[in-house]
Structures are given as C-alpha cells and as structure tokens.
Image 1 (tube, rainbow, N blue to C red):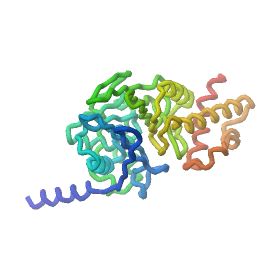
Image 2: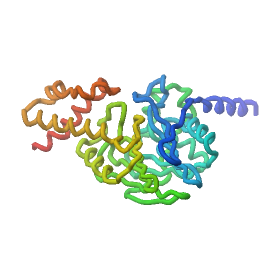
Image 3: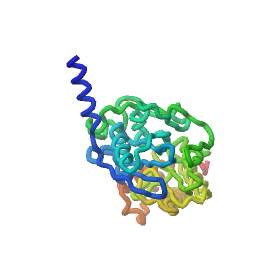
Image 4: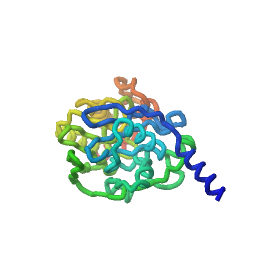
Length: 302
C-alpha cells in the first residue's frame, strides 16, 4: 500500500511540471499560447508550438494539444482561470508530434480527439518520440503518445455550442502528407497548423513545395481575418504572407537554377535568399529546404 501511494505521489509530482504559459486573446472567444520560434530543446521543453482554445459556450475546442502531457495540463490550467469550461473537443492539425503529444492529458478525461486519417499511416508513436529526445524528462513525464480517437478522410463540418467548425483537408501533400485546417465562419478565424509559419523559417522536411503553395492559395480564398499558424505570433489577415513569399521565391529561384543547369550543390550555395536572413532558424533549415525543394522540382523537367 505504501509503495502504491509513493508511486502515485511521484506521478503527480512528475506531471506537475509548469510551463508558465500565458494565453493571448486573438479574437472574440479565442485564446492562443504562442511558443518560441525555435526548435524544441531543454530550455523551451517543447514550448515552441502554438495551441489555441475556442470558447463555444458549451466548452473549449482545443486546436493542437501541444508537445507533452504537462504542456497540455499547463495550458488548460491557465484557460480555466479565464473561464472554467470543460473541453468539448481536441483537434490535431497534422502528424508532427509537437502538435499532438498532449492528447493523452485530454484523453484521460474522456475527451474526443479528432484528426485526419493520415494519423493511421504516418504518426510516429515509437519510443522514444522525437520530442522526448529533445526535452527534459521532467517536461515529458506522463506523456503517452495517443492518436486521435476519430479520424476523417475528407472535409466535414461540426457545430459545437454557438460555433460552426469547418474541417478542410488539403488536396495535396503540403507541409505534411495530409494537413488539416479549421475554419470558424462566425469569427472569420482560420487555424492553419503548420501551413503557416511566422517569426521563423518554415520546414519542408516532410512536405512538398508545390502542394504547400497550392494549399496557401486555397486558404486565401476563405477570407479569414484572424489566421493562426503552427509557429509564430502573427495572427492577422496577412499572417500567411511570410510563408507564401518564402516558398514562392524559393521555387522561382530553384526553377531558374534548374534552367541554368546548376547542380543541387550549386543551387544550395547560390539560393541564399538574404531578405529572409533575419528569421529564426534560417541557418539551420534553409539549406535543407532548398535541397528538398530542388529534388522535387527537378522532376518537372524530366
């Protein structure tokens, strides 16, 4: 009995890691937690991703549960100070684990978690997870990789309380194989996941540059006035511009390099895009982005 009590006390202590998160109101009934514009490490401990809470009057809808059990717990504790609502639904925009490893915290409360059916094929639930290898054991404690309980393969709508939610799955591979966005028409609010980056360079490691640009063209047609991406704090109607401009300029320069007959190494060295040099993670991601995009675009000429 004493052993069980001790183990329970240890679990509670481990799960009590406090991220000291601060919610920011972005529009009526929507608060978001904005992470640092950097890779996950033992300083930010996974607080490098954006998570949003939508007040539907019946409960909060959470868009992306975050990077760990403790992250999700810390965020919800802060939201209860604003308004003590239950969680009505959790949504995962795509399969990269910094956006959904908080699912376990909500699943233990019996909350439905919704994501695309890409999770059935591409979610990485091996141990240790990518996040686990980069953040502290204290911050990762009690995190159990938990996939969405409901997976959808096509666009659908859902009404919760006083809000209608539209789920749109991108038609082509973009940032990931199957990115899903959430649009709330009443608020003209778009939750774009990692299709939109700000303050830091986007990552093409699992994506397709043509599909990503096509996805952004589609998102522009929604007419959203509040746009929250997966990384970065900008959330107005022009929040897509940085990602769109970065990707379209890169594609244009790579196509020119291919026309000139430049090799992949020559293209990587030439395409430095200095107008984006002030962005965080430019040094660590840009060359890899050029390489990935070059390998995709060279097939256009074959």
